Length: 320
Image (cartoon, rainbow, N blue to C red; front, side, top):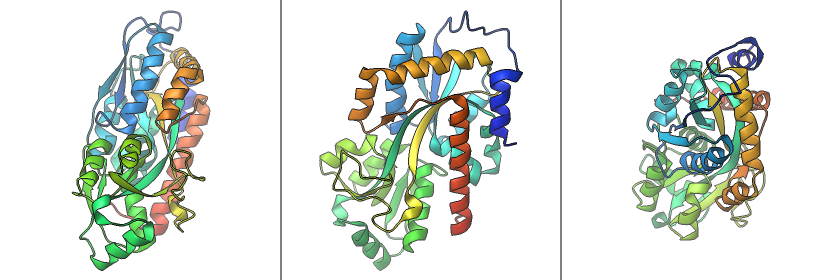
């Protein structure tokens, strides 16, 4: 049985922890770790949800940014936290599904306790407007003319946008130079300044720059075109089916989180994500609210790991 499902069974029914009963939890502020810098998609969505959770739980829900290394240090911070429900993680698809595929020391991620899915969002590939590429075909042609001369920016080594960039190169037979940053916001700024010429990121932190014509959209990774940018084609439409991948953020706790605490937090997430005000705020930024039961989140994470693992093996992708 995969480790994640073992952790889920322990968290939901086979463990007890008298220090945190549902009748008293929470009785002090709750910290949610965001493993990326402020201003990125993880941070934006976490703060919107945390504001609603503060009202529902009756305790302050605080966001703690722990950026760097594709989200791995922040995720490890949760793994080392006490299983009392006062330290949680707003986990990204990259830290939950990509890192365990690429890094042997990230297998502990499978022991975290799933609480609820939070939001989903497609990725979008964008180019520097200075480059003059108006389509994927334009970009690929320019990249092939100058191997390794164009840079692609990511939120860190081993992040999902790093791996998607590697898949892009393998799928288009291009050679770009990977430049990792501390988070998506820094990567975005690098592309707007033409320090890097390509990046991919979930949609929300790039909406403003795209609408201001500071970034050139090339394609989105969702199954359908996004309503915010109906003229931007999908990965499948441009002949890149391996990039038809949707990003997500979810709430998790450390291993052995008591089932009564999981129940309280899952119910709070359901109520928060049912809020018309929160859904409107998320929609405005290109997110889709996406509540789930803990076991459904566990299955989603396992499916994502298999999907990335299959692509990495098939494409023989290696991270230096």
